[in-house]
Amino acid sequence: MEETLEHLKTLQRHLNSIEHMIYVSCKFTRTTEMLRKVMETIVIGYEHFFSVAYDMLVGDEEIYVNTVHDKINLLSESLASRGLSVDLSDYFLLKRLLISDFDCIGEYRKNLCMVSYMDGNEYVINMNKLLGFYENLKIACSGLTSSP
Image (cartoon, rainbow, N blue to C red; front, side, top):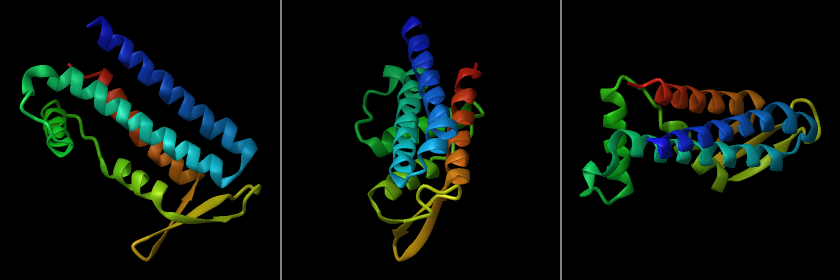
């Protein structure tokens, strides 16, 4: 129990660092590298969330599960049974965006954005999108801490 509380505190500190990166670091840096750093940090936040949620909700009772896909399905079922709705599409989208080719628009400007190319389509990442990704992660984490 004490270990789980420590993991939850670590997760909260990670959320605070993401928020600082978005509201402070990106505001003054305004580079695509900073946008990518925030995206990487959000992905790591999701991975911390998955780890804590899996330990809290599933634990060692499901030892037979050995693939990541099965673990994600089991975790999703456990979260859904507790009334927590976590959209994993943001996590997978961010992972794909980080490995895709991109161009920069407005570097060092107020309206900085990064355009990634995936499957022949353009996907624009700007501060509003990053805030949306962060808010979804924050909601998922708050649901975890308030679960029975």
